[in-house]
Length: 92
Image 1 (cartoon, rainbow, N blue to C red):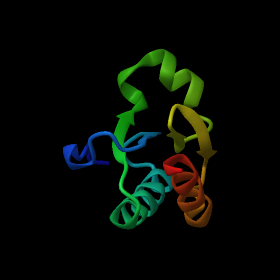
Image 2 (image 1 turned 180 degrees about the vertical axis):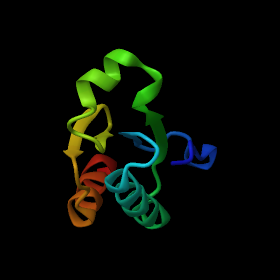
Image 3 (image 1 turned 30 degrees about the vertical axis):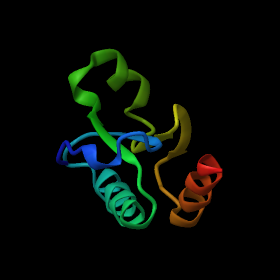
Image 4 (image 1 turned 90 degrees about the horizontal axis):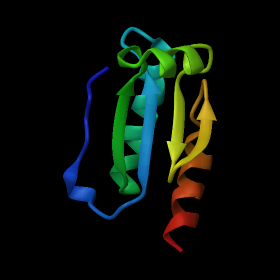
């Protein structure tokens, strides 16, 4: 899982993916996030939960966890349609 953030979306909604390298569900979630990001600009931050013991303990059973605008949006799976709807809601 590559740490990746695009400065080109400054001021856009912040989306955070919590996961860890080698997690196939995290990779699938990242693919969905990148796909949606092409059409619905947002700032993406990827956090490796292995870098923080407390975060790891709290999230290891739920990853990938996706936050949108500071609120938990999903665990385990990212629904592309629901993510697009949520991002549109936040723009209005």
